[in-house]
Image (cartoon, rainbow, N blue to C red; front, side):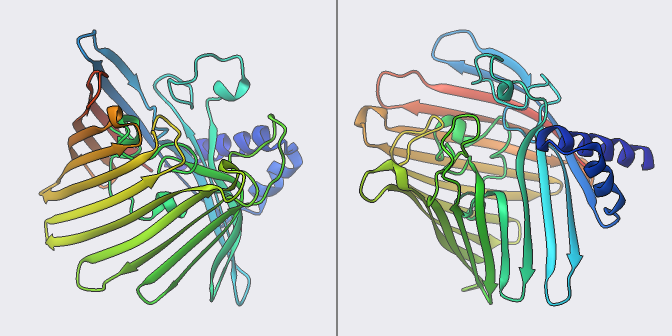
Length: 352
């Protein structure tokens, strides 16, 4: 185990030095002062078979969702508050390319990195909540995130079942400030883009004054959670910008059975998802060491010929406290002339 942590520490610090431009002195200082740092990660590899219409299927061994992760986090007591830090890199142990298959070439160094920063931030935990700066997953993504297979090859956003892009469920935000707080059953999250840099090499993936917010209310009655979330793209319209809005709820029907619901009104199209309304209903059923998930999605798009239905069925089998095996199939049928798209996937995950 000590050898494993030593290897993880070496990789993480080396990645920081390369990605952040830190000198070896800075990296050494971080290690020396890092007695409270916790290193963590997970390894994922999956096989998936994709088919469209009558054409031949495409078989892949990959991790297009970037589910393999390597990270570190710490918490330092400052008296009335705490300084907390979190940095997390994603990578693909199957093909060595941290980006998805949509990257058509390796002419840009960003398309070829083995390690790609997922989120990284520093902030203060205070009696009134957390406030931090850096890169984050937005409240629009983290609140109402009921599809447990979102980050695998079975991802519903790959089939248009949920919004894609930086402003949707699939996105993260760079160069932002973040606030999170809770009071009783109410949890609030707010993130805002802060950088006006526009040069292609340094521009963040969101613009200055773009924002996302979310409010979740838990335990209104036993087993019930509901909330709303919004992502706003100020640059999307010359006057007021445009937004993606989401209403979500989950309910534990019985100890082994839960239901969930999301309704998205998508204006910010991206990541393969068109503008329109997307309704998702699903069930989680636990049976022994298996968690069976059923999802049905109906897309009512602005362009009527692109309306669609998505059905997904999967099972996550817990092999141990640290490992799991997921198998499932997702199918998207389109109202227009587009062919149906199906994905069968098998994924193995280990956390450490």
